[in-house]
Image (cartoon, rainbow, N blue to C red):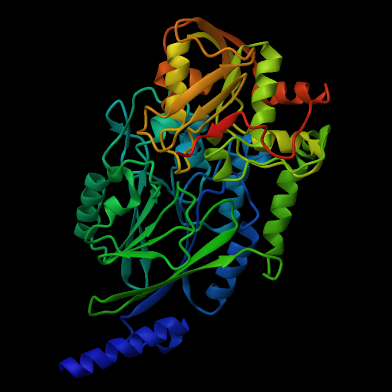
Length: 498
């Protein structure tokens, strides 16, 4: 083929891709397919009726469709939590998902439960870099056949999982380097004849993550498309690094990602990506809505119980809850400290997952806000370790971080212009005396944090700990005393701007 003719051919094919009409392809060996993707839903089912409808309409036109999930899906809302993920799996089976990657919050139920859920799935749960006692515990890859082409999929889970999930459930687990894993999987899938490779990853692009753990690290030759999650990033038109297209569809099912892929028989690849905002103007699949309604009705009696009232919106929006204290974080930490009569209480911003609207507070609100079902424990912690915990909590600022520390019983000021580890300026106790680094205080915290979760190793020492009720239980009890609820935070965390 002459150079000018070949260039014209490529331009024509690209225009055909943009028009999304498979029927007009020039050669029978060229193929288009559509990837529908979503990530970081944390148990929310709202987008699935629309995903199903989009897929059904494309298939009715004769198009090939893949539905892929970027992880953190099976845990986080009342219905999914109470069924330990089964309700979401049933929904995804009905929609027709082709694969998902194991996110760090899939580990909240433990590895044994993850493997049980994988058996319930009509699609593979992928992760190629997780071992337990040096044995791979998930399916590493999967091959799909589309009109004579082999489409290879592989999964990678963030190595941050041991600190982003309950450390007690991490025994024996290792998370291999993402980039090395990607090279291994590309070689394996190419040797099996795959001419298009999709990495399903739960890595993200948070600045607080180590560079080798970010999604950009696996944008290597041979990886054509990366469906990512973990950082809740909305890449409306994707990101291109080399010959790799990276996509991520935000969070909580607010958006649905679309990638239109064209494989030309000569070996060329074209990908067009965009996102669709989920709204009432879209047409849902009513059969999927019926499934969701049935799942929700099973827990409705519990979730509709009114447990309190707030005149104000209680804020747990990301990134606010991971960069500052809010009226909701104040209320939750106050409830923990009050319930146990501790000197101080700690909770990480990433443990507070949903805002509460003004009006009646229901049990459903509380369970969605604190979905991890952690017990509260107390430990006797010396002032030096408390100071170190506070330093760790603001170490990523101004980047939002799940380990951002929320607290009660103290007032803290910090200087973000100082180096991480040297930012705390003052810590004042409730009696208006400064924190004594040589004194021991009673600190209430979630058992997740007491085990060193979110990087709080300074709180994981072998101090005697006493177990109390759960975080939701403390919150519900606290609301019964009609506590003061502020419209905004009460200023217990102060930023000093030099």
